[in-house]
Length: 547
Image 1 (spheres, helix red, strand yellow):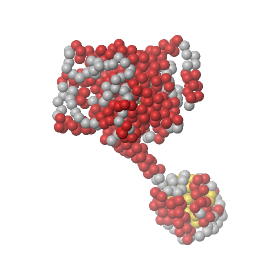
Image 2 (tube, helix red, strand yellow):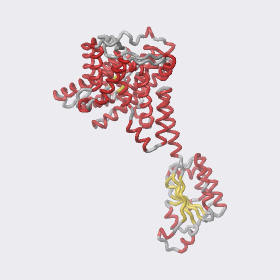
Image 3 (tube, one colour):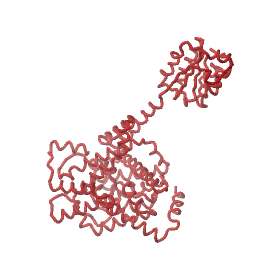
Image 4 (cartoon, helix red, strand yellow):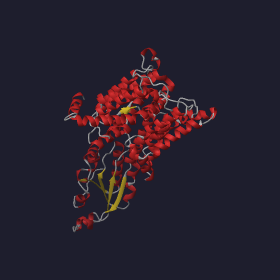
């Protein structure tokens, strides 16, 4: 992995000059403008602070960008990650979240060493779409308090919604108006302008200015420390070591989500740039970054598609774009801290509401539902519900498990098409051959012969009827298990005893191997096997199968 990384760096910076440096710098500053409001918003939505989100974006931008497996990858806090941190922080506190993040980083490094970067290919697309939509719902539900200026209680988003029944729901007009303004601005902001200045940043600036000028009595971000080392950070002295074993499950969820987000982001950006992501190197970079982040007081980070796509569109040339974006955020943190602390939480809630809506893969959802792909719809709905009700780990396990069950059910389907033999179709003028196959039938078998479809195999005896010869075309049989082999042997023996000649044609090598191993080959005899149905019909060899 180290040698490959050095080669990657050499290729990336080959011919690097002042012109490319200027492009990296401008792209980095553009990404920083996009990342600032998102970093603040995701820090708050995670149940931490805006400062945590900002520090995460800076540290991840410096460390992960330097080690990344693709120069275009921009890492930082994301909505998906923030969605699963709320209940973790509510249950185990900030120190518990720091420990889980550190453990997740270690798991990511282990995944890189074991070359597990390609495992995401085994997660079906509807499952990914399902938990993305589930996370979007969690983000939106978690921002209701900040959006409307209300109060709720509970560790999970669902628990908070339920708590309104007892606590009441009393929106604050000023808070709601600020949030709605940001939402409407982001929705209707011209796309061509958004390419120059992100609507989210404009919305936050105006919302902050309105809050300060009108002296609105609404919740704001609060103090932004002028340091990367936040007061509340990973501290061995404050860790409740008895809870560490319980933190392995959320650490695994964080690691899995990081793998999915980072590698899928890299795959998308790789297609756009023509430079393939080094999956193992990316996992290593994410692992190192997430082990370091808790020491600064940050939350988990992943590669972010929104920021990565901005980097690509802005002309990023090397990994310096990610580093410049982090430096830009650091400068903003030191220079604009007095202003940032007045950013209204309602404004950030508006940004997150729009982000949650846009997170949904609407084109994929529309496609699977409009075409009524029942299996895909089931995986999507089940995964989304499990993400909302349980957690990411359960959602992925259930979604992938359901996908495997549906795939096995689909692949185990066996089709047998029957057709009477018509010798005129092969232009046979041999009277002996025509007489022999005058009352013959061909059964075209497609699909694996396994225990799940033995009932279909047994229909052979019923469909033969009064025919005296049955030719089994098995070119479409990729696999035969022992249960189906035994059932087929009994069927062939029964047909032979009833005077029906059996000919097996076109068996693939794996199926023929099972014929030998199961004893069917010995029972039928060499003369009962042909390369194709046509060859069998042109051969006058008599059937002398054994009982």
